[in-house]
Length: 221
Length: 221
Image (tube, rainbow over all chains, first blue to last red; front, side):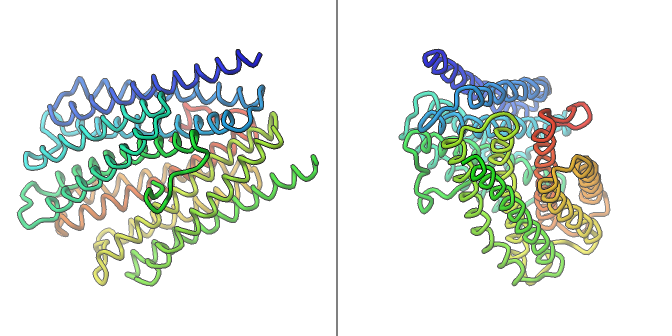
């Protein structure tokens, strides 16, 4: 029974890693939808959000069932509880990717991102996608160095967001109010995807070490 | 030992309700900071966020300890697991109130909300505060009718947000880009506070009935 329990826990973690891959694909496609003005990519992200929600419900139910039937302790209890959190973070990242795709769809066939902001969003999209992939690896390999890298990348995202505000609120903003509103919200969505990825890393550190990283160095997202 | 365990669980729920009161105060003060251009209120919200984070950490640790030492089953396990979720939702509402207060502080002594948007934000602030209070009551009384009311209020918030976009993107927006960006983000923060309150209600329904409300009627936030 103990073996079967460990297998069940391993299966849950495998599915959580798989879910992180689905989410990273959604983030990449959302960026494609946004920057390539690709309506098919937008529709794909929006419709795949239901699959991400279903994966969440399934993983949650199995983690809950493990708690109910096996009453894990110590490191394994930490893992199951962290799983319940991380699956929620991943589901939110999927929602945020869908929010990005919905703005792309709303403005189609016009681009939602004005020309002058493209380089900024290219980097935001890249950082966000890589963070989600890295969060999945961190989880799969229980790797503390990856977790630290996620912290650094989250700071890169914050810097990109500051650049964005400088452009948005600078004197030479010439794209009007609608574009400004879109950019402000899109930037917020990418920033939140990054926050959630960093939060997954934080929980992996907790699972592996039994402690959260020092909040002085790594403020809770 | 069983009695003591139940007492511990009751204490956790009492503190969660207490935390919801702290959060509702933060939301009210954030709205005061924003609409009354009150820098002291803004500072209070921003500094009280650390107390909310501390309450979260404390409740989490105690819920985890209950799981580890008592291995609850059935309804009690559902309650403890839901507690872990709800404490995260409340902590996020505190963050969002602080985000609102930070925009108020950034623009001080100018108001961040232009005159034409005041009625909209008065209502948003009111709906958000009432939703947080009601989420606390729902939790404290395990009251399914209150939970349903939260669902209705969340739809009211969505409607207010749509009104906001109509004003923001209408032809007669005369407040410039900075105000538009502020309003778009502030609206997003209030909307998310409402989403989290509705999500707390959803989890109370789950705890009481063992099922989530019908997702056809009540989409997962």
